[in-house]
Length: 398
Image 1 (tube, rainbow, N blue to C red):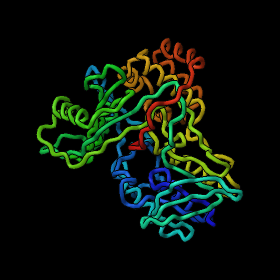
Image 2 (image 1 turned 120 degrees about the horizontal axis):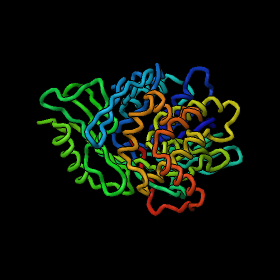
Image 3 (image 1 turned 30 degrees about the vertical axis):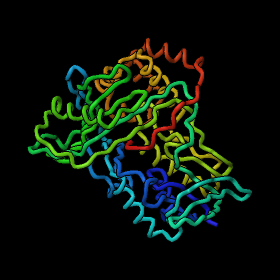
């Protein structure tokens, strides 16, 4: 019987398998990954900011030491958050890197199968799977870490979605600065509810990932995204002639719901289903790495629970921001642009990643619309958490 079964070969499952396959870790691990077919998601992009080598450099396809934000008035602010860099990797490159390392680890095996049910047993947990040939398989382990989407999202006071569509474009002439990532470009028409921005990750002077993103309650149709992208590329970026070489589309939950990390005594949820997505930003990948390292460190003594991917202060601040955005008490474009203009960039990125002290967070809070934020903070404890009416969005880029 293996020590650990990991369900799902996405960012969370692969990251945990990667950490458990390091030298000195003696755990026997089975990674249950869906076979080729409709259950396997399309290739996607993950981004995070890091400092120094992190063991993933081989999978990083591009990185930027400078970030830019364009306000709705057209003014740009460019920051250098040294020593942090903004890093991008593609899911296929990450999977290739992790699989190569798992192949060198005798204690890890990859099983191509569809996980159907998981339940606890006196000795740990059992996973029932369906093999590609239709056979039913029964696996048992001391611990199961499940990254599949939860059947229903947790009750919440606020639920928004970060939804987007991106094009990998190639232009006829040099149009991009490969040294600067456009993190938020608010020079796009704003929706009646929520906010919208462009997002540009230059891969070369003539190639980039160009995205249109909204924070709102409901995703758009593919046609609506393409219309917005066409206008952004033509009217704002002035790309001239270009070719769309690939596209990606997704939705990321932005909610103050409380995700349950323990489904049974020996069954734990990880990744987006375990609350790894940062509610106010949608970033997930960096939190998954922290959580995976913590699980690997705790496994020899037996994890009582999966460590929380985000601290209580960070989640409380995110709940206030989400509510203030959803009610329209703060102007989203002005809010985010103001943070980049008024807060030291390295501190701001650490704040967005949950790595700041209470004093630093207080100083950042003073640079926000204090009245609107305080009013929202006061009312939140009196608001009920209501069940969602729709299934949760899938895990994507960040």
